[in-house]
Amino acid sequence: MLNRVRQFFRSLQEPDRQGARTPREREPRHNLFEAAAVYVAACAEDDEQRGDEAAGWVSPEALSFGVTELACRAVIALARERDETPQSVARSLLGLPAA
Image (tube, rainbow, N blue to C red; front, side, top):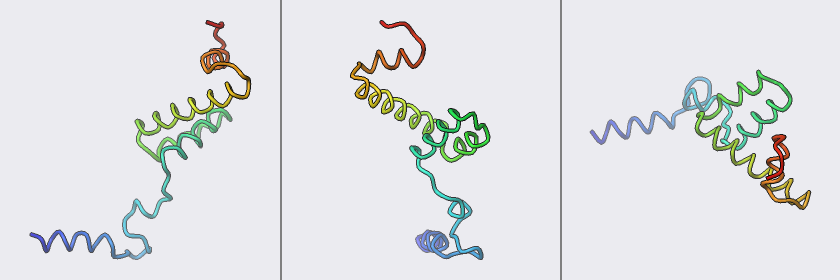
């Protein structure tokens, strides 16, 4: 049994004909923050194809987390730049009246 496990891990380390170990490794690797940045920028530029591509780089849950993190960081940066609270900046960006 242990021998089979070793063979399995050894097969992962041996390159295939295309030089990559697995089909997943032939694709460029993207982290969730890169996917979120590309996705949000594509949405802002109305580039549906690029947004769909970025959405496929990570799981929907990871993309959601990345987009949320990007939104938080953007609101904080704008609030500091404008010398306002994050809440007032967020409401302003969404076109909501001041609280």
